[in-house]
Image (cartoon, rainbow over all chains, first blue to last red; front, side, top):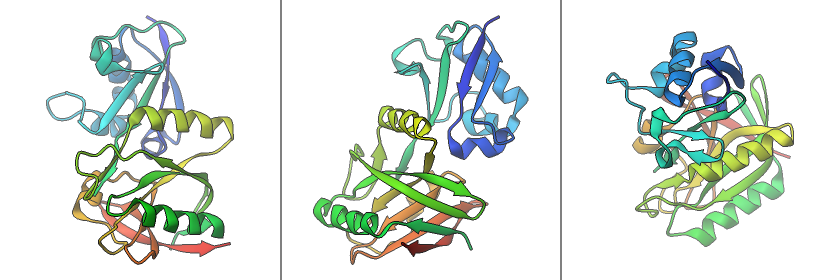
Length: 92
Length: 134
């Protein structure tokens, strides 16, 4: 199992004891985020819907690349990789 | 009530940006520092509005957000909020703003008349923040 750096945006930090960054195990982006959800359910609720799919207004980056352009939640990660959670910034 | 401390030149810049961008909504990220109930704004960064209908909505490219967040972290700051304009309306949040808002951010809105107001999501509703110009 690798340990990956997960960066949280300011709006989600309140649900992770104020942390901006965590180091979590996992071999894929999905496994890392699942671990994050287990540790901090408040973050998990905002990442995943009832069907366990990523919510539409959440973007996940592996390094500088959106995981939608990689293998989605199955994107493999290595120790030291950075996974960033980016909220969709939108309104009307 | 929370307070957003906004440098006067940035206020003028936001009003000008909004005026020049009309009838489309303009948008961007607000960088600064939050200390308890006070948000001190250091910079605002304009973003391209990539919404399908920029006359009635805004959407910021997540890649742009990622770049800005890295930049802010390097400067010891963070993204403390978002600004956008309502070129045809008042500087109050729309239903879409409420639906898509995140907690702990200041949402600065520039109205059609150039008035600025700031809002924060608290338990699924917007609460107004005071804006103090310095």
